[in-house]
Image (tube, rainbow, N blue to C red):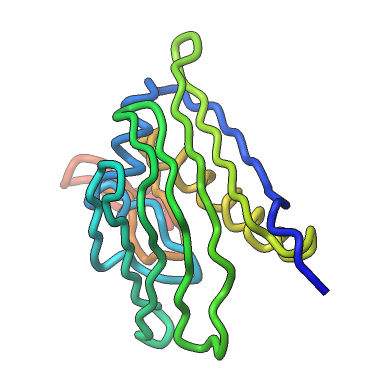
Length: 178
């Protein structure tokens, strides 16, 4: 029985910042470390050769067990600040067989005083197989939105905002909230 690798999912999100700022948050290591934390992990390395046939590889370390895994591929199209098209393959340590090869089409468009990000992931074997990926993208884009709005990108990361309720008063004042 053959598979239908034409199945895809699409997630769109509006942001209150210009598309260039979203693009930079998507492609720059220091920004990515702040918001992208899939599978309870931290981004520890990035290879990102932003050109056609350039390699993109993200290396993550899980915060719960220190296992390392990668996701990456090769760019087939790069329009700086506007569009990225690349292959996408997860390599997880606990997997006995690797997942499908996917393709990501990511578009960054200015809209009004903000922007719209569109992520399309193609290559699913079934609609059911796309569901955890859809949930993952929704969660990641929530964290990206929080990061771009100046908030804490991920509440489970252990990081805290510089300002914590009750500790922002003058030094002579006592803590008022926990």
